Image 1 (cartoon, rainbow, N blue to C red):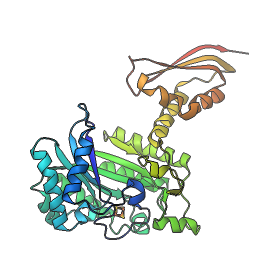
Image 2 (tube, rainbow, N blue to C red):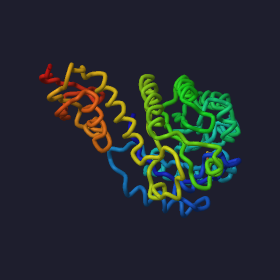
Image 3 (cartoon, rainbow, N blue to C red):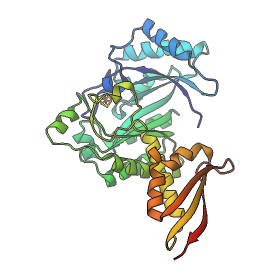
Image 4 (tube, helix red, strand yellow):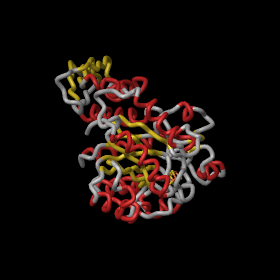
Length: 345
Ligand code: SF4
């Protein structure tokens, strides 16, 4: 899958029928503005295009942070019309947006069919109807299934976003959601652990003791299981965890929950730790030296954050010297263990 160059145009909460309990787009996107007017939109896009890199393809204008097809039809048409001008003059390849599953119907899709929209992302969040109801989503899993069917019929590239750790969610429900999403065969997915954002309805639940977010470790492990399941189904996972920003780093923005600026890295590190644990043969006593060879791209994933994996492995297998070395000959998902001299007592 190519890595697109995305020009994000944030429309915080525009088009939302109500506020979902976990959401505060102003905090996530750092954008506090009203819907951009035409001039602002062009200036914003022009500024972003300065950072375009050749190897990133396609170039897409992305309307994020709200419920795009929930906007008034005139606004939908205005934004798409302006974006389409840049596609026509060759600066941009196509358009993408995120929207709610219950905004997808033939009538709305007819409104956008004349514009060069290539990718549509749906905020699925969960396929458990009870979890959806508690999160005040206002749609069901059936809405998601119908929406995907309609988008497939019109040949859009489909991205599905899911959350883990919403009120009432548990590991079994999160994995069941993952399986149902995989069954819909989207082109890619994003997985977000639920964090308590300031000024979201969930913040009040948290402060009143009615909601406890999942711990970071649990979230990493569940997202890891989902990631591996999607990858085994050949479905790319393009994001795990909220994108870090200066605003999110502020303590006043995230009140609690499994937010980590390198959440995806934590997931990949746990995958490499599991692989190493499965591959190292325990010695009767201690190991003198163990060498782990991975693709150079994966050195830091194998080490883990702050060398955490190294410490865990050394302790678990009583290894005196653990080396992690790069090997270009290995594919990115491989790990080779060289065990030298185990000391037997
Ligand atoms: S999750 Fe989506 S629909 Fe719900 S309030 Fe946030 S932006 Fe709006």
